[in-house]
Amino acid sequence: MSERTPEEREAARRERMKRRGEDPGPQTGSGTPTPEPPAPTPPSPGAAPAAPEGPREPERSSPPPPVRPPSPGDRPIGTVPPPGSRPAPPEAAAARRRSPGRHALVFALAVLVAGLLAFAFISTFEPFKGDGGQTVRVRIPPGLSAGEVGSLLADRGVVSSGFFFELRATLSGKRGDLRSGVYSLSEGMSNGAALSALTGGAAAAPVITVVIPEGPSRQEVAPLVERQGVKGDYLKASASSKALDPKRYGAPSSARSLEGFLFPATYELLRTKPDATALVTKQLNAFKANFRTVNLSYARSKNLTAYDILTIASMIERETSVASERRLIAAVIYNRLRRSIPLGIDASTRYAVGNWNAPLTGAQLRSRSPYNTRNRQGLPPGPIGNPGLASIRAAARPASVDFLYYVVAPCKGGAHAFSTTDAQFQQDVAAYNAKRAELGGRDPKECPK
Image (tube, rainbow, N blue to C red):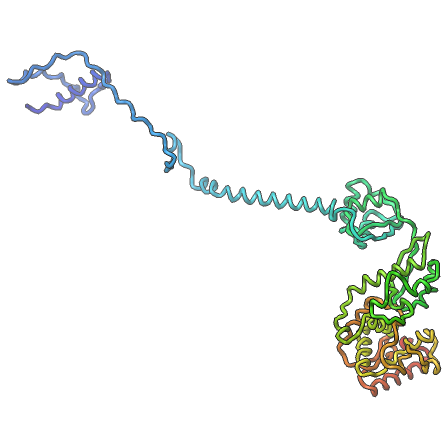
């Protein structure tokens, strides 16, 4: 069969497109017109006659294959962007990747701010909860501002902060409602409870204040408390009490009073009943509370009882007014007891003869009283006064020194000169006597400038 010319192939193409209903369009290529198709070539010998042309069925495209839904295990690899869309720039993608971290940071900051606000709220309104613990009697003088009242309460441990008490009073509109008087409050009260007590509660009953200094014996304390308004017989009340048994602290059965246990402090008694027995009970309770804080292990290692410690402390209280010397005086007492040297503490002799101010006479110094530590070895039978906590602690734990002597140092404000030898002690005594003679017999601990 002879090969068709290009023109024949183009004509056949256009014929096919006509039968499909498509516009064949102009022939592309050169700008010359398309030549007329040549006359049909007669069939070659032996060829079958061509079937007559008739209408042809239009071609039908086969339906698209069904789309299989993704199985549970399928994961899309990527997303095909819709037509006309552009991929996001790298900066935007990075920002999206960073956004979870930024959100976490914002959340953390929000939690922190909320916590701070909650703390401020709690500190303002409820630094403590409830009505508090141990009772505290507080005197609110007239004319104090809310801030001054708050500071006073904070100093006494009633509230945690004077500033927040004032803030609570301001926010609740009660700054001007605070009333003066004496109140029975409690340690660790909430601001709200304290504010209610000072604005709506009744003031406590009127009281008298009784001040008992450290050191004096009960014989000296009796007229002192009487002058401060205490009624009743203080000496009788302080002879014995159900509130404390001295024998539990190692006192001998011959102990004749509560001397040493009458704790010196400031006390308040009801003005309607300022009773001596009530005062003694308060003193004994204060002693028990304070003495529990003293470490007695060292003293016990030296075979000393709690009663012995009170006896030593009472002498320390009488011998020095200089705080730094308390443990030094205690060391001298311990060292002399260990060497069986008489203590030679005149304060115990003064206790025995009742002479606290005038010079001791020769007869008094030769007294046969068991409290005369010049001519008797060991401790006196019991305390010669009522020591404070600092002297009790010094007596329980003396300084680690070898001193055996001390005497008032001239012109040193009551301080002492300590020594380890008798020779040095005699020199210190001579210096004391010379200065005393120079001052006309006056005590040379204070000298005119």
